[in-house]
Structures are given as structure tokens and as C-alpha cells.
Image 1 (tube, one colour):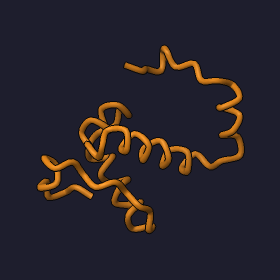
Image 2 (image 1 turned 135 degrees about the vertical axis):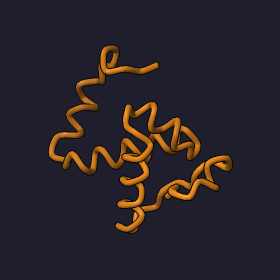
Image 3 (image 1 turned 180 degrees about the vertical axis):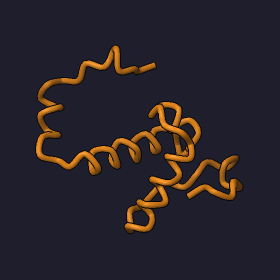
Image 4 (image 1 turned 120 degrees about the vertical axis):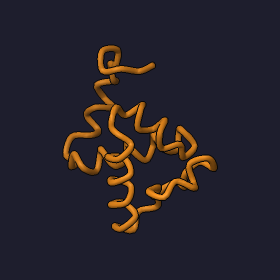
Length: 83
């Protein structure tokens, strides 16, 4: 599992983030993690080390901003707070 302790990004890749707003980088990381987990919010929150509530609140914010958010996995789709 990738952790902050073994994360050594390519300096050239990190330089590409310079000038971007932190909120934009965070949004893209969250959405990329959600796509990688095939919409599994619980798994994505675990990978990101944030609570499922925080993830759901951020996703709701993205939806309200008109950003396309991957749908939840089938077993999570019935959860009343999923966005």
C-alpha cells in the first residue's frame, strides 16, 4: 500500500503541480482515486485516509459545482447519503 513514507514522486511530475490551486489538486486526486476503486467510496476514503463522511461531503460539493463524479459501486448505491 502506498503511504506518505514510501511516496517519492518524480520531481518533474511534482513540478507540474506548481501554480495549481490546492483545492483543484485535491479534487483531481479524489476523483482519480474514486475511478481507480471503480466508485467504491469506502475504499477510496481508506486510501485517501479521510472519513467516508468527508469524502461524501466533497463529492456532493463537486456535484453541485457541475463536476462529473463516478457513480457509487452497486453495494453502496443504496446508501442514503451517497453522492
